[in-house]
Image (cartoon, rainbow, N blue to C red; front, side):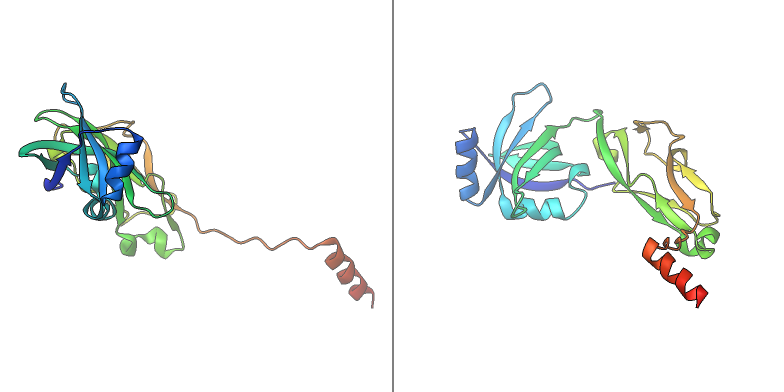
Length: 208
């Protein structure tokens, strides 16, 4: 399970595009905390630290405790926007979470066991149908990733979502019979068809 991370933020008195641009010029990222039957709170985060958190992985499945002027809010990121040119964060949305509450998140899927997969040894290819799985789960139980093994699988075999071991109380948002990984047969490259010019040349050579 992902650990709760602590971050500091400052409150923003002004909101809107102009105020957000002013925050960014100060090396900060505008953000908002919402949900929990409480009024939204506009905050500002250190832009460099926020970028490190986003690109460090698991950002959207990590629980944070944000300290804002002495008050701590337990939240989970729901969305973020990056500058399309410079890749720095320009806004983050956080959702308040309470004990017993569930959230819907995408959890990455990692495939292992390729070295012990007969299908791969015969030239087959591991085809990952779903690179992440969407589940509804209590925030404290969000896994960093799901791991499935293809050891022992042959060409044509597949794994379905039902093989995933979910945290207690968690549910997949789609059917557990959905295919997530297959062992596909090796691809065969077809000989390119001869062009009309090549065909005529070959015919002329045969007559000589």
